[in-house]
Image 1 (tube, rainbow, N blue to C red):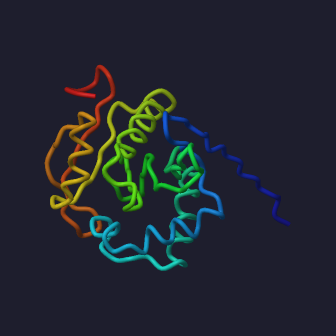
Image 2: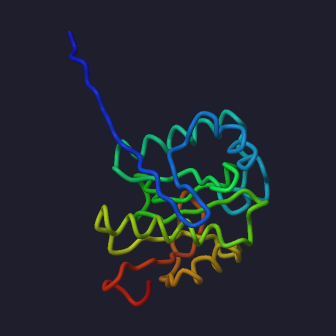
Length: 182
């Protein structure tokens, strides 16, 4: 007879001026699936709209990384009205060359500084709680909006690499005292 094994993990909640960074909830599915089915949102993130079923599976994967690595991606919620905005966090698939500071917003929230606001909180926690000295942002070269966010945050372009068959720019977010800029 196999013994019972219990895995427990905690996903913290972070707060910025306008956002809650929190664990995904089942109730996020409709807003998340709508965001993930938007071809413009997906253009630089796999270039295929996700079905509701794939959005659910992605949510499961995001939650599972917390258990496996102790860090992961947060759902973003507007404090003012409780609306789902997008995601940001430390994404670290097994085949990635290093942990990535990721961010993606539903289209209606673009251009308001919310991605940068979320990333600042994510980076601070990654350094303080997990000792990261650097995090990457892997960005498709044509994704000018995401590149502007990385630049705004002081990330430095280190070169190019390929992830899952796609060429991407490799931007680095350095922690204080470990690199050229934070």
